[in-house]
Length: 282
Image 1 (cartoon, rainbow, N blue to C red):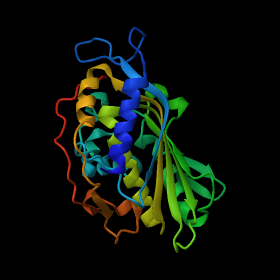
Image 2 (image 1 turned 90 degrees about the vertical axis):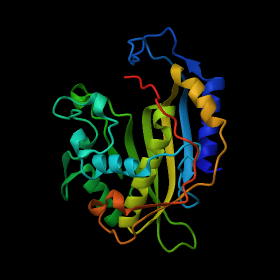
Image 3 (image 1 turned 30 degrees about the horizontal axis):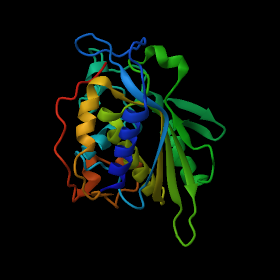
Image 4 (image 1 turned 135 degrees about the vertical axis):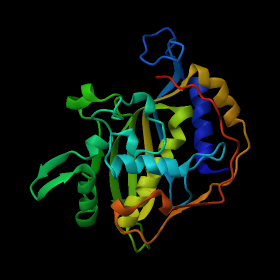
């Protein structure tokens, strides 16, 4: 069993057995047939993964790691808010006729702010600070800009990334750690997708900063399982598990903006069958 499987099974079991329901309450999401999409949820879930031990991919079912990487590059490298710049079709429901999702995600990363030492967008500032002032406690990105929410087709779910550097005894290179704050998560559809995305982002940023990728801490304010997903989740977490896959990056890449999905190397990824036709609430 991978550590990610263990965390996922424990989290889902806790939500199903001890969560609270939104049934009967006023909720925003609806199913395709127009009925309200209720959830069972837990508030304030915190999961920790150590990338020095293994990559946090589920083996209960396979997570598309290259697609995960493509979306994270779409946001933080290409800084795009247009689905035409993205290979996976996960944002199609929220895009307008031109492919835009509004002033969301990559649009926010690319916004330039003025600092005493120059003008930088959010990701460029992170990379600069990790090079020049790595022990700062101010190295982060934040996609939740209140002034722009009305022009976003969907409010950002995973929105705040905080980078923190530690120096472990006996280790030559510093360790780069990451904390991700997420306001809301559809656990079946998105949990391991988000975990793998930000683990890959941590690996990429650590590599180009000359550091070791360390802990990834994932904080979810509202971790929920939709009512029509409960039976699917129960079946999923009852499956056999396998050891975590080996995941690494092309070591020759030293520029964050040079990474492509071809630089992701995945080996020995054994998993259960894919879950098909998951209903998505919009």
